[in-house]
Amino acid sequence: GVGMGMTVPVSITAFPAEDGSFQQKVKVSVRIPSQFQDNPPCPTDESIKIEERQGMTIYSTQFGGYAKEADYVKYAAKLKAALGSETAYRKDFYLCNGYDPPMKPYGRRNEVWFVKE
Image (cartoon, rainbow, N blue to C red):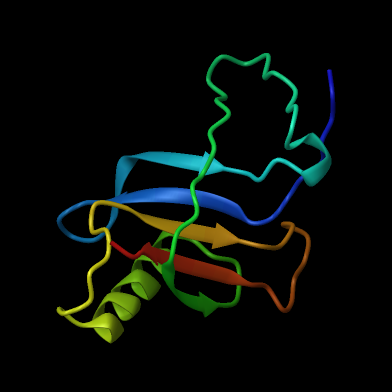
């Protein structure tokens, strides 16, 4: 019964298929606001889980516009190319992040993150 409002970024964990597209499974994550960090409200929907994300080092790229799956796939490929074959990062998933509400038409911010191994 507690409303926490929307936080940013909204983070989607993408599990890339062989062709680079998303597999059918994705995980959507939102940040619990600071005032609820120590004692978050319990979700009433069993499909919602509270997880603690450990600190990480990431490689990131940023782009604008209304991001779709194809945009995240494209920028993940660009980031992969920029990092080259010598850089160690997780290849089994990456994070797609959006920072803006749907009604913001201009100056949108999206990012792709690869997690350093």
